[in-house]
View 1 (cartoon, rainbow, N blue to C red):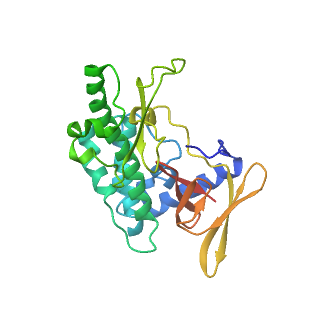
View 2: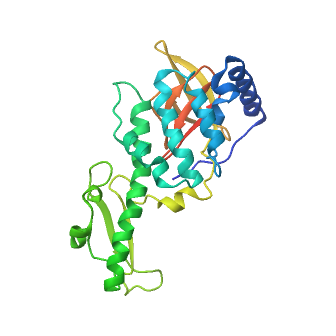
View 3: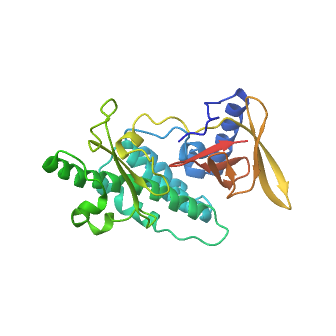
Length: 269
């Protein structure tokens, strides 16, 4: 879900900073000329993912080691959004969902969380097939998942966090008495999570409504976020901290990597 204050914000100053950043990265050879924004764009790429994957593969040779999991996630995220068949990306998604990370490393836990969000959507789609089979035989959805437990494969009996699925039947809008004709399903931590097909279609850009300033806190680099529209403070945080509904994952020289509920994206400052 987008934060309530999210809006598309792309000022002239931001475009100039992004251009300067792209020139700098091209000179340094990152991704053979690919800018950081091209590696983790705010607007998720759709369609043919081949050229994007090539950029990510090239960047893997030059980015610092701590960012490699973020790069690997993007190599899964891009084909998912592009509509590639599940066998292309399912195995790597499951590996990232099991990822462990060193202490004080915000990249690993963030990548693990993002992978689990997308894996939850995949598993919800599989559970939907089980639920619809029940519906065809009974002209209603089961009152609980326990009622169809024997039909649910073992790998689907809990969500990717190892917690129970949140499941509830309800009536279609305008038909209050037909209480078992629709259902809501999601992981415990995100019970309203959108389905896989819905999540891959017409994705809005990740929110970037901030004016960002680098700060030094106790000798460690931090970023101050203010709303671009009003200048109101949002957060001053180091990598691993929250920025509204997002997480600050990594702070570079003049750019930062953030994550919202289901994707990574960059900002320049």
